[in-house]
Image (cartoon, rainbow, N blue to C red; front, side, top):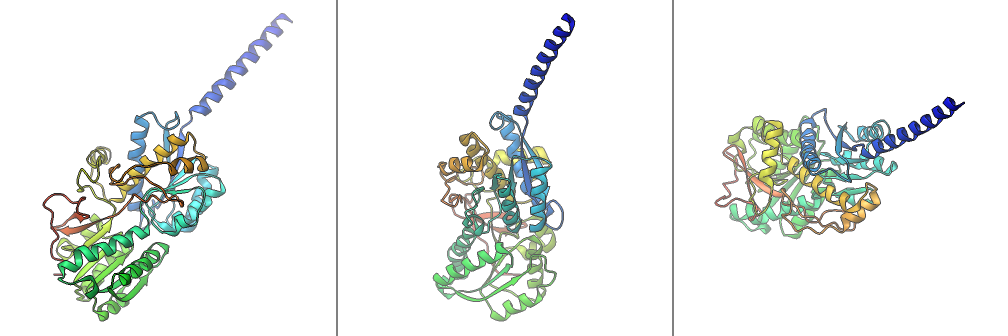
Length: 409
C-alpha cells in the first residue's frame, strides 16, 4: 500500500510536470505565417521574389527576438489563380495551423484568399496586390501596407505630365493617349482611374484596350492602338502580357512617341525577351528600386546586401523590397497590438504614424479607415543602356540622373 501510494504521488507529479512542459512548449511554438503567392505557373518567379522579401524580413525579426516572444516561421502556400487561393488558405489554416497570412503578387488571388482567411478569423496582411477594391470591401481582417491601384494611376498621370509631355515638347492637353490593360480587377481598376485622371488633365484618351493576362496574341490590340495614332501608349499588366505587347508593337512597326509600362516591364526577363536596344527610353512605373537615393529609401543598401548574402544574386524584381518593407510594418503593428487577433492588429495599425521614407522602399506608415497605407507610393524608372534607372520623383533619383529620349528606335 505504501509503495502504491508513493507511485500514485510520483505519477501525479510527473503528469503535472508533463502538462507544464507541454504548456510551455505550446507557448514557445513559432508564429506560423502562410505566405500566399504563385510558386508554380507563369508568375512563379515573381511570387517567389515577393516571398524572398518576407524571408529577409523574418530573418531580421527573428534576429531581434521574434514577435510576441516567439520565433516567426513562413509556410508557403502555392496559389496561381483565385480558386487555388481559396483552397490553399483552407489547407494552411486547417492542416498547417498557420496563425495569419501574408500575400501576394496577384490581386485576384488576394481577393479570394483574404476572404477565405476571414472565415477562419485570421489576419491577412497584404504587401503587394494593388487592386483598389481589396481595401474598399472593408474586410475586417485585411490590411494593406503597400500602395494601391489609385497610386499607379496617379503616378501615371504625373509622369505623363512632368516627364513625357516636356520630352515630346507638348503640353499634356495636346497629348493623345492609348490605354491598354490586362482585364482582371488589377488592370481594369487602374485603367479606369487613368482614363478619368488623364481626361481631367486635358489629355485626349483615343482608346482603351483590354486583354487576358495569359493571352498569346495581341495583334488586334496593337493594330487598333496603331490606327488611333497616339503620342503615348500606357500598358498595365504582368510580365508575360507586357513582354508580348512590346514584341507585338515592334513587329508591327508601331512607333508611338513614348511607351509607359505600369506594374511591369522592368525585370531581367523583359530585358532578355525584348533586348536592350528596343527597350532604351521606355518608362516603367513600379515599386521603388535599389538605385533610389539614401534619403528617399533609408536602409535599401542594407536590404540589398542581405539579399545578395542569402540568395547569391541581385533582386529579380522591385516587388521584393516592397514585400520586405511591408513585413516590417506588419511586425510593428503586431508588437503594438500584443496579439495576432485581426481586430487588435487593425486597431494598432490604425495608430501607426511614420513619415514617408521611414522604410527601405521609401514608404511611411499611416492607414486610412479602409486600412490602406496612404504613405506608400510608386516610382518611375527608365531603361537606359540595358539597366533600369530611377527618374521620378526627383527626390528618389540619384544626383545627375536625366531622362533620355523616349521614342522607339
